[in-house]
Length: 52
Image 1 (tube, rainbow, N blue to C red):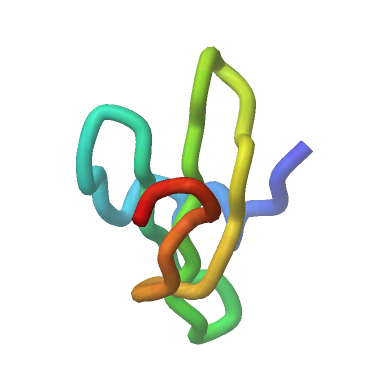
Image 2: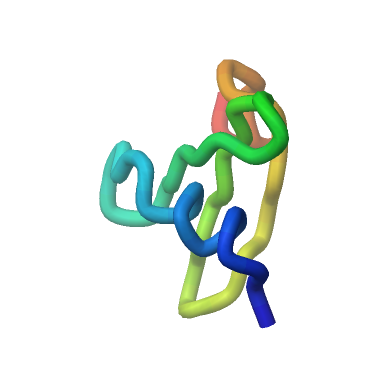
């Protein structure tokens, strides 16, 4: 379950069909979602594995 701060941050930006960017504790993080599951989490600007 997400706390109120995390819930607010999750909806910040939709970057594409499966990449979400959000702020958490002042850091920009990105999630890669495939098939309904989060497959990668990293700092904004990093490249997910296998995408080069």
